[in-house]
Image (cartoon, rainbow, N blue to C red; front, side, top):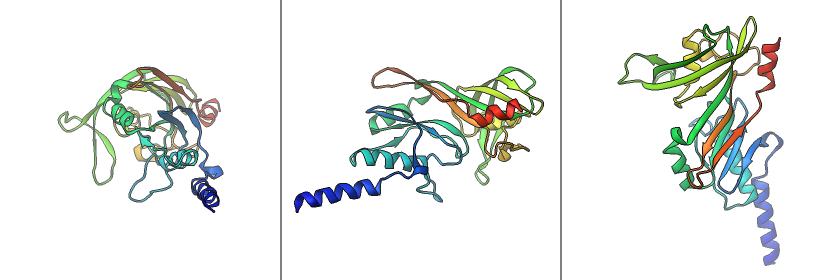
Length: 241
């Protein structure tokens, strides 16, 4: 009877945390300390007041609980709902704390690719500005008030272009909210599909921004870890048209 109860309990755990096909994760890397996911566009990284379960965090939680009911997961950083790409989760609170409290130094390279409207006047440039946020609309904007705004530094390079759009490689030195989207819009080249920041086109039916590379130093092992993903096919197709 005891053995039967044990089997039934284990079966229940697996059933509760079973992943459906649409919940399947694109796992880039996993070890005892970290799990790194290639996040699809259109899903929140973590929950909000309006959405608790349809998040990447919830999917990772279900995946790890399915493997072992004692597993834990902690968010290290996040991407906007409509941005795809690399997201790192920690399996321990200690590592989460160490990463979050020195993220700008430990994340030694943060690279994105973006498709923007038009072609920037400079093939390569570093953008520096101070950003603030409207608390009513949650829209981020550039400000000349250095005391109020937060410094954002974004470097881009044009990789390819056609008559309508350009593919950019982007490296950020700061991780401020919406900084890539705001700064590219400010130079007259908003990211496609980014209606919030003045884009007028949406040829791929999603935001044209993807976090494709992260070089991270593990503060516990001091090991440099390199995570990369492919450029989304739809980004390439819209440039090659």
